[in-house]
Amino acid sequence: MAKELLVGITEKGACHAGGESEFDLETKFRMVKESGVYDYFDKTPESLDVVDEYRRLSEKYDLPIRAGGWFYTLGRDEDLLEQKIRVSASLGSKVHNTQIMMHHADGHLVSNEEVANTYMRAYDVGEEVGCAPTFEVHVNMWSEHYGRVMEVAQLVEARGVPYRMTLDHSHVIFKIDNPEEQEVLDMRPDVESGKVVLDPYQDGNVCDQWIGQNYVWHCHARAAVPNNPKNIWGRHPDGRVGRGIQYPFIQPAAGEYHSDWDEAKLEPWKEVVRHLLAHHAAQEDSPLGQISTEFIPGPDYGMGNKYSIFEHSVACAKWIKATWAETVAAN
Image (cartoon, rainbow, N blue to C red):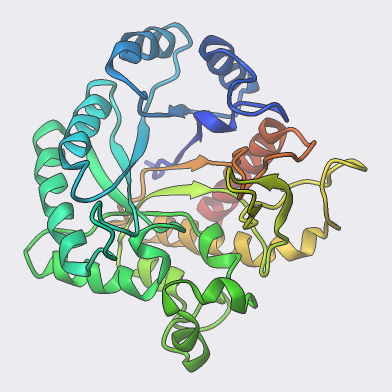
């Protein structure tokens, strides 16, 4: 029997150019189902009082809520993390994408040991309820220095359990040839010395390390390019311009995107997906279960842009499925 790989979409991707509030929840479920390309919906509800509505719509549209996720500040949200894993499991989710913020509630930069300890507590809850927490590679999180991922993984493995992560390699790709972004968490010296390799075409790059170690249980697919243009049409509440961690997947119409678009620039991002799919197809023990497209309308991503986020999400999902079919056929 051919190995399975499901493709879903995060709820934030079910919009055009109008942002997260553009459509009500039922419309989002209907859009995703009617696209004909998605296998599941990716979401952990904001509050307990809407869980039943998510369950109802999942059943109505025959669209499982296979994955979800949330973000957490250590020193404040430990109980919330447990609650969200349990809620995710109650909706049938197999993974809970776990974002641990860079700073502790008291302001200090969280340590590798603190992250590992949090992972172990979340792991135990996940094992109990059947929903695996997967710690994400992401900006503004502990993992924004990408060398830390392997360090935390080794701390976890030394305690006798597998390390499970969400690969969102847009956060890796946009820092290539981007010294300003590499300064975050002082990663630039490690990039320049070759200790941390971002380029997926170079041996020993971080994405290949994570894939090869079977750490990737879940993946978020949002296209980005090296030295990705800042999102000059997006603004944070304090007025800062968006960092730029999203690139249109297909040719945008005139006036829909703030910068020039070149399809060839997407190749490094696509190469990581190809490596991930090839590993999954070839390795019996590959733990990857699903990929969620995650084109979103936040300030660092697609806010203010005029292209349809959903249209680009669907195009990306179709490409992933076609690439998976080609990978399986060649394996």
